[in-house]
Length: 164
Picture 1 (cartoon, rainbow, N blue to C red):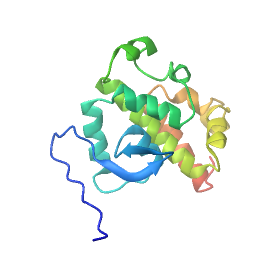
Picture 2 (tube, rainbow, N blue to C red; picture 1 turned 90 degrees about the horizontal axis):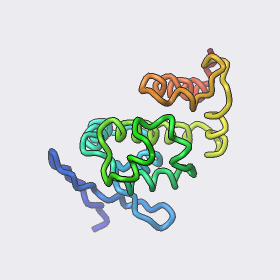
Picture 3 (cartoon, one colour; picture 1 turned 90 degrees about the vertical axis):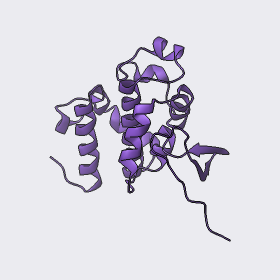
C-alpha cells in the first residue's frame, strides 16, 4: 500500500484535513495557522485555501496553538491584532479581519524562520530598528496589511542578500 491518502477539500467544507506530520507529539491541522508557520512554501491552491480559512474564521484554539508554537504571548500582539485581547477571549471563532491578521502573522513567522538561523534570531530582528525601514522596528509595522508586505519584502531581501 505505501500510498498516503489524498485530501479532498469540498467547496465550502469547514472540516480541516489532518496532516501526517507531527510536531512535539501533536497533530497539526493542515492549513491551520501553526501549520502555515511550519510550511511557508506556497503550493498549488495554498493561498486559495488560506482565503477560505480566513472567511471561515480562525478558532481560538488554533490561535492559542500558534502563540505557543512561536513562543510568544497574546499580549505581545495587542497593537497588531484588530480586536482587543479581552474580546478575543470571549469568542471561540474570530471574525474575518482578526483571522486575516492571524494568518498574516503565521505566514510572516514561517518565512522568517526559513530565512533566519533560529527563531530567536528572527524575533530579535523583528524588534531591532532597521535603517531600510526608516529606523522602525519591523514589528511596529505589523498593524496593517501594507506593513506586513513591507516587512515580508525586507525578509526576502535578506534571504537573497539584496540590501536597500
